[in-house]
Image 1: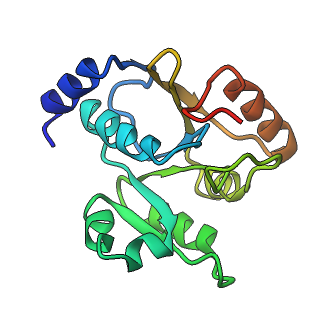
Image 2: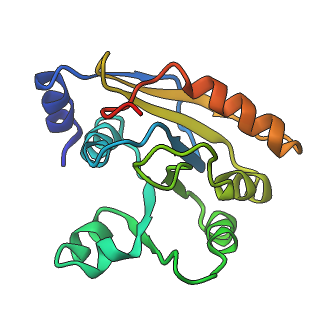
Length: 177
């Protein structure tokens, strides 16, 4: 979808975008929190188009097995089979290491339900591939999509995760838990 159409639709629905990325942002992981509704996907597609972002995303394999599977793939989706112990982290690190520009959106909650603990594969990918995180939120009460400046992970996973969880506390999803 053309960027101007996406910006128009977001405006009609009352959404604004605060994009704090530097110009010509390269490879990165777009960490999307909170993820509480299927609507996040559609808002995300509009925001992605509006800011000219070429990012892929990881999603549960069952979406790609459905009649709309072709559509999810066409939109940049990569299926994740959570029933098998495949090493998705290594696969995504390899994409970052071999593709000149690669960006991917990941929801660390791993589900739309309330979770107390995030999945941390995104941190391992960022650390191993040496790519920044871009903290991305769709704050429904304010109808504000926020895209942060790059966050570079350290060697201290627990410290980084705590800082990230603290950052995202100010944003409210469509279905607050």
